[in-house]
Structure formats: C-alpha cells, structure tokens
Length: 273
Image (cartoon, rainbow, N blue to C red; front, side, top):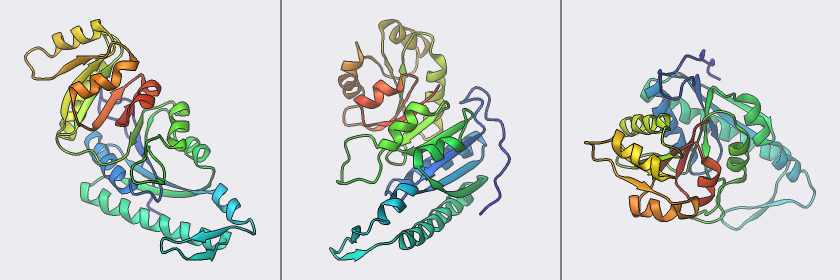
C-alpha cells in the first residue's frame, strides 16, 4: 500500500478547508470513471487523493449460509464460501489500487489506498471527516443497464457525511453542464464553486435559482457573460426548469439543498455544507 500523504490546505475560497479527496471504490462500472474525475479535482485543488475499498462483511456473512450458491454470467451455478469471496475481494482491491496508481501518476497527484472490512456506510464514515471531500458512485451495482434510483450507500452517506460530497455515475466531460443551484440571493459560494468547476472540467456554466430574488441577483452578478439563468418556482418544478436550461443535458449540480434535489434528479451532485 502507498504511504498516505500528509493532508494539505486547499485552494483559498474553493471548497475550503478541504484537506483531501476520498474516493469510495467498488466493483461497479462507475468506479474507474468516478476515480478519474476525483483525481482531476485533486490535481486542480493540489490536495491528496485517497482511495478506500470496503470488503462488505454482510456479503461474507451471507455466503456462509449453507444454501447460498453463485450464478455466473454464463448461467453456471457454483458453491461459494467466505474463503472464496474473500479471495475475490482481495483480487478486486489490488485491481482498484492499480487503477489509482495509474490515474494518479498520469496527473501527478499524491495518492494512497486502503482496504478494510466492515459494513460499508459505517466504515466510510469512520474514515472521513468534515474536511474531506468524499466521492462515491451515485448508484450501486446495477440490476439493469439504466438504474433509476440512488444507491442505498449513497443515500445513507448523503444523510450523514458532514463535509462536501460528490455523487457521480459517470466521468465529468468537457462541455458537460455545471449548474449552480442557488437557494437564496447571497449564496455566492455555490456560484463561485460552480464557476471554478466549469473551468477545471471545461464545462458549461449555468444557474438554477430556487427563488426570484436569487435569480435576479445571479443575473446582475453575471451581467455581460453568456451564462443562462433559470428559476424553479418550487422543488416540484425543478425537473422542468432543468430541462429548459439544458434539454437532454447531463453534468453536475452544485448545491446546498441536496436531499430534495437528489430525490428529483439523476444528475451528478456536489453537495456542499
């Protein structure tokens, strides 16, 4: 395992005082893409990147039951034991660590990685604090090709993590929408953060205000810039406002009113305290 780097202060005015970016990894198809986004953010903020893989003790307890068998992708059925599953988890952890080493080296980011065993939510929350930006997949292991609900781990962490939280289901790309969701007229920290993220990821900045005064203040502040501003009359009309702002779009919502937004939309989310 790489030696954990010492946390360093973040860029003033941007997610301060974030000391490191912690990425929760699993076997889902989203993990590597999420890791690349987190690594680019760590590079821009000049903070360390730390990866965590939790060997879910509940799965190990489950396969200890005598009637449990595994159905492979080819349709074969085979017995599975805690020893077999633990070995497969260890192989996966080494693969994830390899991803981290490769991506961090390509961006010259300080990194570390650790594996631990326990219940996933409790294990993650025991390792992060309010100065950590925690990043994880918005969805868990999908049953279908297009998941439609937030994963249980993401939902539980959203309700409990006291610091900034980045929930993604794919890598942020150039020209993706970076939408500042303003809850009141003086929420400039959210707008400034969205502006900086649009610079980092070469995204398209926009503003969605949840009240008329916030929309007017944003238009005044952005006067002379071609930044679209829309207003949602209520959280119930958020979906329509987003559609009008970015029809067919996708990207990242940056907001302080995260639980309600998460229930409404399937965008990526950066929730700031």
